[in-house]
Length: 94
Image (cartoon, rainbow, N blue to C red; front, side, top):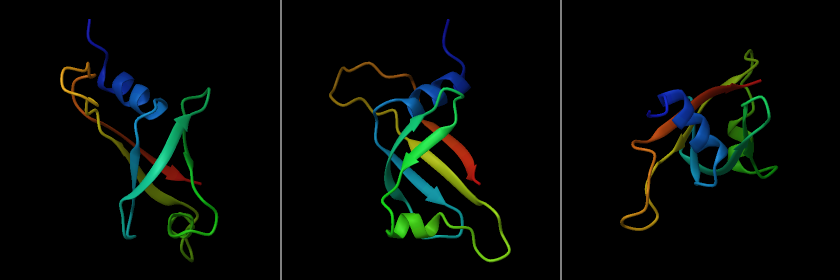
């Protein structure tokens, strides 16, 4: 039995593959390190004071920012196993 698309996305977001953060209405993508917590929420490691941290701050009159974490399911070397597609996990920063 194949995993569902949601299971593949959660596995990719929780894994060790590099990701790109695409932030709505901001220049992107930004390379990020990521993980998931016990509840399955996506966490991103972001350096304080950088362009990415600034892009993640909500604009005036807004209380969140739309973010898509893009994690490609690309095998590291030819013949390596893969999950069968690519995964993205969309979220909102609050």
